[in-house]
Length: 245
Image (tube, rainbow, N blue to C red; front, side, top):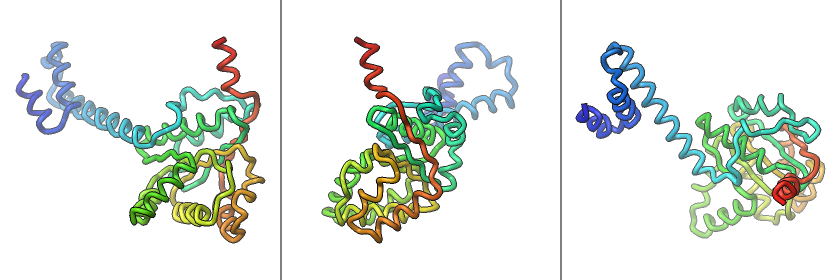
């Protein structure tokens, strides 16, 4: 019996090996038919591979917060509409390349909600990348210096869900604006992008206005089809601090 477990592990089937060991420990091998036992072992291997894949996707995404959809508190007065969130939980917006905007004052839970959406995408097998916008530009600069910019842009273009946090903290300079436009252009209608900002969407043009042509192109590709959350209310950080005092 131990030899079977070792052989399964050597074949890189740890889920099946673990389930087989469990069957031995619970004395269930005699009560299961070959068909039922094999079906359960295959399901165990599938579940194990799915969990491992999801864990890798979550780690690679580098979310700002460890948040999940089952932790979301629905409150329409704060701008967290239950129907909208549950629709996004299906991840259809990712399959159709629909952008999502999350705006609101500091501390209203924008980054937390974005992290929860990203986590849900990972659990559904999608590749996600979470960037503070200016960390993204730092990586672009390093890639440009290393002559690997084409590869970096290709990686971003192939990411199923790109989450860009802290958009609008400062006006984008000329090269940043062109790089941002290239990212949005590559993803338009193909991959979904979540943009998180303290600025209302109506003020985004001011962040991009150094090149009005690029600004028009970027906003045209984002604004018309986007799902929007406009978060309101008192800072969640302030509420948390009050509870701990």
